[in-house]
Length: 478
Image 1: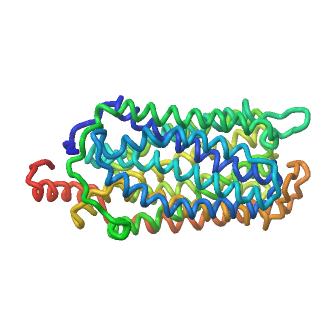
Image 2 (image 1 turned 60 degrees about the vertical axis):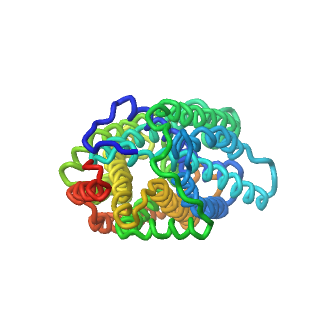
Image 3 (image 1 turned 30 degrees about the horizontal axis):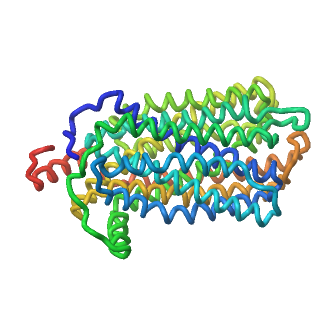
């Protein structure tokens, strides 16, 4: 599809496109926030086993993603390359999501295997929805800033999906009862959490696809040639060997490991370090969503001022500094009593600011992938949007798996036992947990920022490349 670079996209199309990322947000919230806690503290599986199962599932699924992206690039129908995937995958995904939160009663070894299998299934089906959906970005526009605009809507809706689930979990599904004083340890609410999440996933992806149907449903410009598995693997290897992609991959890997650690350990921090009560848990999604809205308005002006790589680098450093300040102050005894109103308000303030910059990093980085598409096209003669975005998911899943596994190691090293009441945790356990966490995320942010600034595609590079591609194709479109 050829879209003039300067043509602005209508708001309704941006909203429709972003809506599909709700499914990814629901998945991310569940895997990163509740799954480790549920299988460890509720079902009693050791944290190291849970984190190992999730990491194994991530690694298995990560190798599936590039082939999903490649097959999406090679799809040739009257509905285009992406829509058939967006119509076929969401309902099976919703059902698989429910199974993840309804494990049978079994021995630890069987629960471990069940978690691996269902986690692989869910993640593969999420990729079958998310990869074709996000691969539409470079097809919809070639403009440097419009791509960031599309990505910020994806992140807005993705976070909205995750935070809706977070809000409902804390306020409706996972609430205390007579047998469970801590709502997150109440096993009865996880079934409802799974049902609602599965329905929301299916509805969001199908609605997004239908709303974009008129714009993207047409025969692709070129009919792909028949290919073998070996040839497909070779094309994937050529695309993902692009220098710009490799630099992006290295920077993104460190950023996502940090994010994976933060998300998977967050409930432990809220419960055991900051002693959030039910009101604080209900307000937390609101604070986080406001931070995403702040990033939504912040990212485009920063990209115009600094370009995408420098925005990602600078925001990474600023964000982690703001995020760890409360932890540092707590370690040196200068923070209000955890659980008090002053402590909770302070945490919300710093988390709002820190997360605003953290989301800015991710939006800028995701938009950089779209610009790699033309850089690869100039080298190989092929547009492989799906392959590149699937490659990004490969990185995200491997790095998230490392992050989740690292969280399990941090929890075990700190000495936090399974099914422990927050009031019974020793001070030295909390201090070890906090110290290990903040040291790791600071180092990861610094390394990620150092690599991001070396990303070779800037605005002027992208615009010059579009002119060269237009001239070589004889279209006159720049």
